[in-house]
Length: 424
Length: 166
Ligand code: SF4
Image (tube, rainbow over all chains, first blue to last red; front, side, top):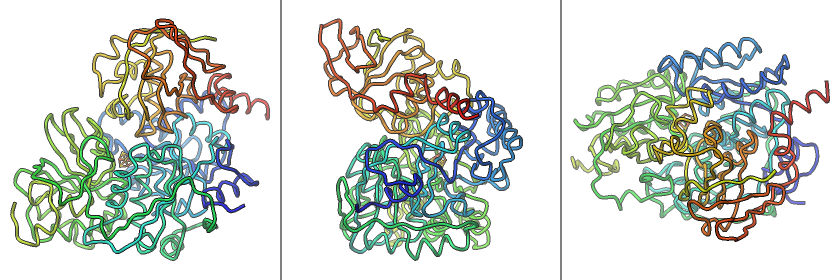
């Protein structure tokens, strides 16, 4: 029977054909935990009293949320995870110095490859779908069970296919396509389902933009956001892969729950207003919204291409006197490349600060928390109440170019307003 | 075993995990500590007022957002006996089942009011509203999940599997 890429990957891992809706227990290729989800998993795992992980090479631990340790409690949690990593000989352990935001780091390090089944105790694990993997976020107890058995229970999801066609307008990125999509289908529009992104626009989208799209599948409730591997994928993966992998494609007559088509020639840069990622508006519809802070980073938009785009806007400019600009390269490699390319200098000259890789403000941890009534535009993925600080603060989600222009003008703005010399 | 309790609060649609347990409290694995901050992102008085055995009701997509298991743990630890919603976000759904927090998907939650006394039969998924003598049905769990629930959660299931194979 004709199958989607998701059904094919799951069938291959199960060793028999799966059907949608079926509950299966399937072997995983990678199991990921971080400094806030691994501790709960470790506590549960250790209760089992077994003395080894199912396969220590398939476990990846990344300390990224509250690291470098933001306070004593974070320090204790990290120490706990570190000790676990040592005890069970986890080689793929990423601590300060090697660490980056997990969903930028794992693909960069070649740890996740097309055709894999990946589970992570972090909701944005769906990011790796951009490489043609089946990857999904689970909870800590799930991770503990995988630590022990190497298997996860899953319901084979139905798939919604999203077809993007047309020609992208200037400053429209993967972020805008996914925000537009979430705005269209809502925050539970793909609950329990796989989202498959395809079409000529996706084929022409660089890996960075694809990662951004898959990353935010969860913001529509999606189980994964998957893209069929192509030349662009292979070019990214081949120099990084240290093991064999297999690529899958959906059959032409595969069954989809729904097919949605978007004419991208009509899509403008998008901004998601508080307090839901689905609360989107096109940039031209937005009146004067003043901001206090701009954050460029996160697993959604902290890649080198994102920093390059922000730098392109900020080069030779100064940010608004009432705005704090915080730039957070997602990994050490990205940080170093940005340094070599002179991007860091551009950010600092513009009046911004540049931080070591961390999730930091994205989840309201530290490094840029908002006070009551403050407003931030960010390249992150969630703008829930209190997400970046005080319950009465606001987060607006946008792409790096919009975020950078907003930092310059002190209000939500498009780069086109800057090139026109408008000083808002 | 039947679950009986009073409806303590009704929540709107799309309650997210940052509202259930704000990220600043993710620096602990202590269930008691998490319980103290349960629902703090939306209702500061929730944790101190909710009673043991109370039930919470929500509209669709309860628990959306992050994968933090701290969210269902906080709800369970502050004494809530079960959550009934029109639907649950995927990861919250599996986390709740994995840790043994009873949850039920019910289309008829609009008929339930704050203060109603409910009696739920997990095996059949029938909800009796004792205050108004109504009965509602819920989406039944697939067999595998029913098994997980019966043994008391995923780790108990895994533990039995590990000892069966060793
Ligand atoms: S950057 Fe934000 S969304 Fe991404 S893993 Fe970190 S906290 Fe989660």
